[in-house]
Image 1 (cartoon, rainbow, N blue to C red):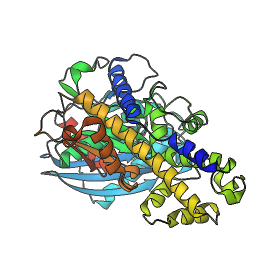
Image 2 (image 1 turned 120 degrees about the vertical axis):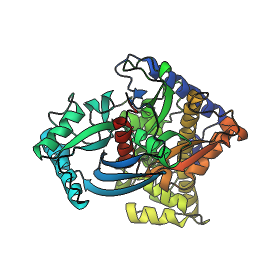
Image 3 (image 1 turned 45 degrees about the horizontal axis):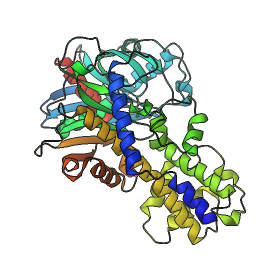
Image 4 (image 1 turned 180 degrees about the horizontal axis):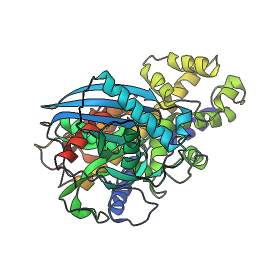
Length: 458
Ligand code: GLC
């Protein structure tokens, strides 16, 4: 009885070939829809105003900042040519006080951090203006390569005097107040940074993906396809897909646990794809399924159907625990014991309990890899015949992927590739490389600042 309850729960997370194909088709249709949509609620397929990738030959010194949900990174990036870079980077935690204070305080602080970096690298600027590239992981409506209105700031930010303002003006306001001659020449999404920076070291890169707390991707599209874009003429454009926000109910295989995560989230109905795939949510899926199974006495039977308090709080089961559990190849799955004892005070698990937890974790992790693979295939389909050519046996297409889930989750890359072979067939899949891309934020921003500065943007 308990075994069939357990198997019924786990099997909800198993994707069939048909389900994966439906995800590919559904996402491909949404990628097309996003190119022409005029619905202000549809934030997908954002033009970046960047019209070419770096060649790897670029040289020069650029400043960069990468503002995420937790940290601000500042960097001086020396582009040395031949794909070589020299980077001096500093990291500052963004405090709760800053996140919920005034915009002016935030941008003063960013200027201070920039000033500290300039001291570290002992840069004597004289009167010369330094160019800066900015990676910003919040929603902005981009109006030029270096301009965009701040639309919304999730991730615990509540800044006054910022919404609707132009990010370049806000940043340069802070620099001027600190007498720093810094000019913002590019503003990019983190996926665009990943694509651009990985293309610098690996020129066959045509897609950049983030697989971390959130997930998203950028790719190169024919400008003639982007009918919602009405800026200066160009042939091609890097688009920030915001695939996080894609995913219609008709094709997303949501379990009741996925629906629960969505229902209690800050914005229900938003970022449905991301909520099934990314690092912020995978562990929570495991927790919700476990709680349900414990209540039905289908796991941890020694608890007698009573869920321990430690397992009751939202997001208590981190995706990192999944990585720990999957890293342990022993038949006894002793890592399961460690995680539950150390982090939840739960002891006395049976061998069955341990292998069930392992199976649940593995199935949810694998689903994430399969869905990410499906999304990559949708992008490859959309770009095929233009920036990508999967039908040419001599052409390799590299997907640069940044983020803790891709980097740290055991076998993630392998599972993605297995799934791509299943969807695309061995021949076409063999022309694709999945590569870990690192530090896309600052290097990508510096590269785009350079590209913008030398006329590679509109
Ligand atoms: C979220 C953001 C997106 C970002 C992604 C990865 O989905 O909406 O802009 O690229 O997280 O950090």
